[in-house]
Length: 325
Image (cartoon, rainbow, N blue to C red):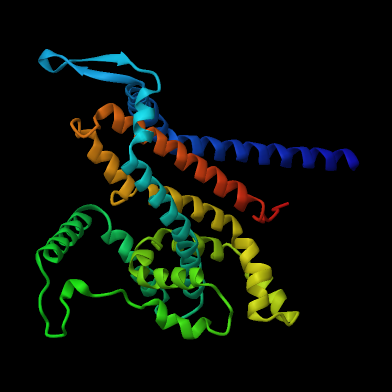
């Protein structure tokens, strides 16, 4: 009888291993087009870009060019550019303030939309609409409209009879509007300005929170309802359930969304750093050029990788992974 049980256990293990192998093959088959494109298309471009950053491009007749090795000379020129360092520091500073705001807001919205409410699917679609509107042709139209508004603001504002032009409109709120809320909390002016900046930038935060919201929703729906039922039977409050059950179970998604937000912020088309690097590509007379722009890109890439590694290292220490066995 014991030998029969051993054989059954051995057969189950073999089936489990074969099933894992089939899943692994299906996974590799799914990512195969990406791997082929990475090897044949993307990696040669990356290699050429890295090669250009260590050379000076000398144009020749007939559209040809010659590469003259300069070592780290292009990187030194890039770091000596005061505008580049200023834009780089400003972009990193904005990112430090944007990541918590976007992750917290998307988690808050995901928790609300995970509730059983009437029209839940419609509300989810509404919150994801800004992600669709910020891509493709609609994004170009939006950028053109913003450029037109900027031009109108520079040429002169429309007098509406209020004593100030339309271009002189302030943000949604000012720091003084929140002073009454924090007057008894003994907080500094830094927190006050941070909250004011988040409220005034709420449109941008909503636009950049759609994907993070969907990731949080997927994580929330993967939590077993039996866990919440057990907490309810034990008399746990909603606040205790969130911090003891929901937040630890959703912590891997917080790590994913934080890394995604870093990448999305640094690689977006309207990023001030990306725009500055692109403008330096053809600015040969202003101390730029293809090789300087490429060196700036690689410096930027190294900084982004460093920030991602730092975020992953910090958040990984607090991530809870549920065991399936």
